Length: 194
Image (cartoon, rainbow, N blue to C red; front, side, top):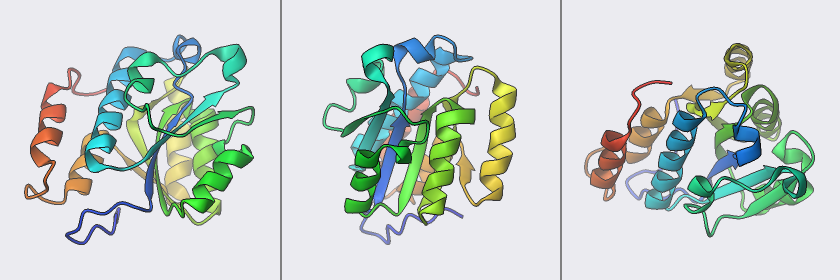
């Protein structure tokens, strides 16, 4: 069970969204990339509504380019970390940011599931951070590889959830101040499954 510790105050100070390597160059090889970009865009819009900080990583952006504009335009105030390592935690500035912000729960999206998503989630768990991986907000060149990794991530305690489950868990009830806005995002989603 995911517990966001929001006890009627809807405070998510120790929660962060993480968008891993959603760079146009890397997205070109990802299965169903358009649906993935749409899902991560909805995720970013929702994080803004909940006032949950979102951070971005980019794999060697000097060679592979920056985060796609559909995502970066929604995360203009988000910290951005360039990395050479596959785990986001291998980049010392990212690891320091997580520690200084006292993040207790990471919500992971991005690419590629069997590599950077998987390794970042494993390292977060090793650091005692609760992890939710949004299964329809992560992508892979080979979907079968992603499926294998989901089983491993679940076995070490990661929550594997679709985006809409996460959003309604964050809401808690229809009384939340952003309920209507989140409902509109969900209804506007063009694809029912990925």
